[in-house]
Image (cartoon, rainbow, N blue to C red; front, top):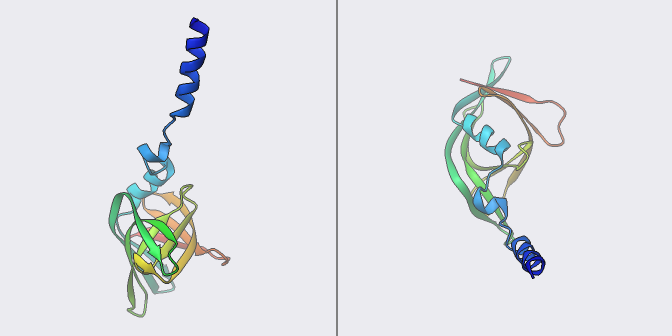
Length: 142
């Protein structure tokens, strides 16, 4: 009788597992990188400077919708300012493994997506490159 009760409770426990993402939506790698993502970072190549300033970070992902109705999650905002003065605020989503970051031009009805490979170096440095590019841009805290 005890063996039957134990088997039943074991089966019941395996059916009620909670998805870890429901408890904490961010991986440990994401949390480490998010802790670095504040303030302004600068990429300077021969006096041509691009800056990325991290804005709001969401404590849990916010749902965004593409023009075609597909949904994704975003994790915060950032502003990119190019050497020529052009400046754009984008939403970002850091990939679960921390090896990629996607920029979106707006949260609702997203029409442009920019996919980058991402490397966390330390609390003051990160590297990104367009996924199909060869060269990495290294951003350092300003």
